[in-house]
Image (cartoon, rainbow, N blue to C red; front, side):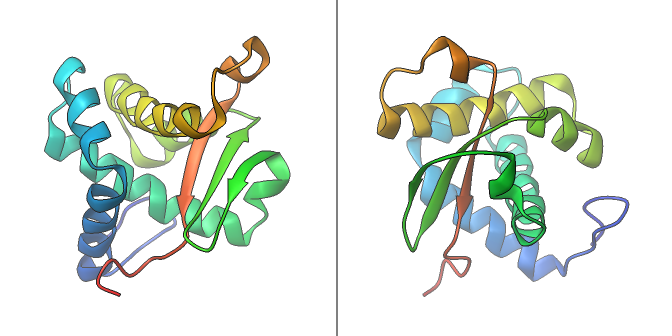
Length: 137
């Protein structure tokens, strides 16, 4: 399955990524999808694509492009510089509403952990890289 022009994954890997983001973000997906002009299913697929691309970018030094808010064996929460979500929209040919909804899911989770976001961080892109990739472990 081709998820970007330069990245292919097996369908079962994409399916696992969908299960992973559903399990990880949980009700936040429902809350955002309720108020966004995208379906829950669409939002899960966008979040899964972002996770797969984020994993690839992590190998290439994603954490060098921002500030790590929290890190554990299970996740890394980041405020990124450089238009991460704009890049995701371009890579995955996302509609603006899809990109905004996915960004909002990530923002809500980081704000829940990091507290009130300063004005400086509002200009940065939130991203949660889920480290435990196999949701069945």
